Structures are given as C-alpha cells and as structure tokens.
Amino acid sequence: MTKSDALRGWALKGAAARLEEISGERAAIHRAFPELRRRGTPALASEPAPIGDPKPKRTRGKRGMSAAQRKAVGDRMRKYWASRRAGG
Image (cartoon, rainbow, N blue to C red; front, side):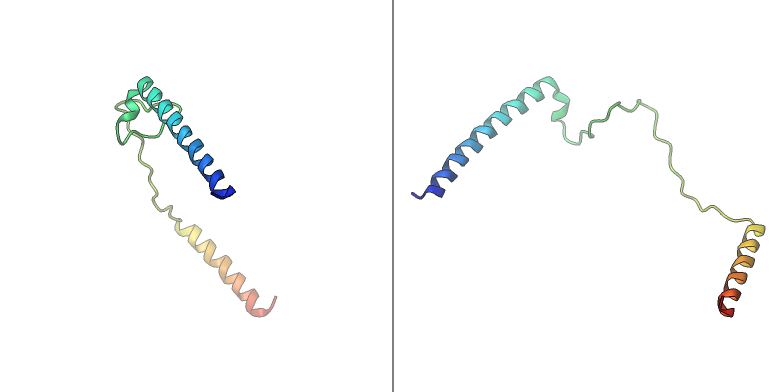
C-alpha cells in the first residue's frame, strides 16, 4: 500500500464519519420541523405569504407614444440624419 493509498483510505473514513454526523443533524432538523419533509416545500422566506392574498399580476403592456411625441421624435431623427449626410 502506497502512502497516497493510505491517505485516501483515511480521507474516506473521515468522509464516511462526517456523512453520519450530517445524517444525524438532518434527522434532528426534521424532528424539529416536520413540514420540511414534504416534497415541493417552497424555499424559506423571511415572512410567509398571507393566505388568500394572491400576488398582484405584473402587466408588461406597451407604453404608447402620443401622436405629438411620435412627430417630435420623427422631426429630431430627420434633423439628425440630415446633419449626418451633410457631414457634420
């Protein structure tokens, strides 16, 4: 057995012991908080959402421009491209 094999063996034993410790800690947590055993439990939040109070829906509608705004933009762009064509 080489030195690296021996080192790996010790590391394996240490890892196995740590996994047993973690398993015990997990069991203690589940005894304290049995609701965590259920699948699909949402991630813990700082404060639970109130029951019967759905989140407001976010709307992402287009914000339209008025005809005057469109005309102003068009005028500015015509002026911009005219100056670009003129070279300056």
